[in-house]
Length: 403
Image (cartoon, rainbow, N blue to C red):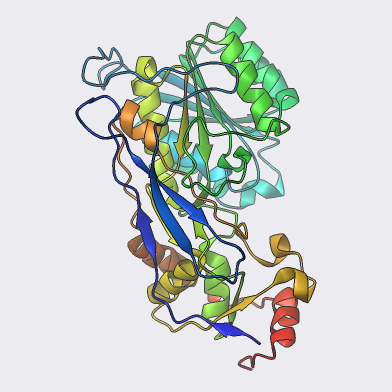
């Protein structure tokens, strides 16, 4: 039988931590355990220290009170962004470029592929004119030939927002090293953390040794004296070409049930991409502080899966009917039927706050209102959409669907 959710939206916030003042207690971590997705959420609090370490290199935490920062608004940097041409991470390069330009830095964004490809007709690529009008440069090509693509230009910092494995990133990293690039940044993924009952994930937690991003992280730490790793999670923002909030809007505006696997109380983290770009910009402007560190590139609040559905409905000014299901019992692949992991998946940006003095600006209820306005503006609410997997789930639960 279908289970209808009646609990209120839930947003969780972790207290700001300060590991540099011995008079203050260390930050808390939320320890969550659940015997099954259908059981109630039981949680406990435990005190633990967080040490920021790289899988093979011990990272250092600098004291922001005593650190002498050389990079400032007056010191402009030349930054190259190697940007993916697909997936949810593409929008990171777009926002990062705009934020750097807004701060007076020089930016070149190298996008994989050809400018004439069909992919470039989609967001965020069809908005690259905004980068050019702000004074940035856009080029296209093969990152393995980055030197020739950028025409021998020199850069102070390089961000690789493309590769997921060492074979892809190595040519860019090795070129940057040989070209005298002072700082190398890499967009990794919070998905490399091993599942745990003790949340949130913090920098230094165990990672999956066989994950492609891990090999890249190790290589970068070995060859650069100034490097930083960023591990994003789920994100929203204008220009994103991977469904997140749109998945919920698609069902809510059509008065369809929203099928959520498990109990719906699983915690996740959804950040506005502006938070990611501001963190990256701080790393460029504070290279000494950022150097040798891993940063969870996420907002500082968590939301339940049910809560996300309810916040999307609130943004749309509509009601929502949530149904829960067991993917295995129904015989569907939750990865294909739902946009988020069917588990607790929540990282905290502890290092960015402690080391860079970064603060999150994501306001999920308000950000979702903006996203809904754009959703309607582009006409997606009127678009014909097939819900084949939804129909299979709903049919098995015997839930009526509006016609």
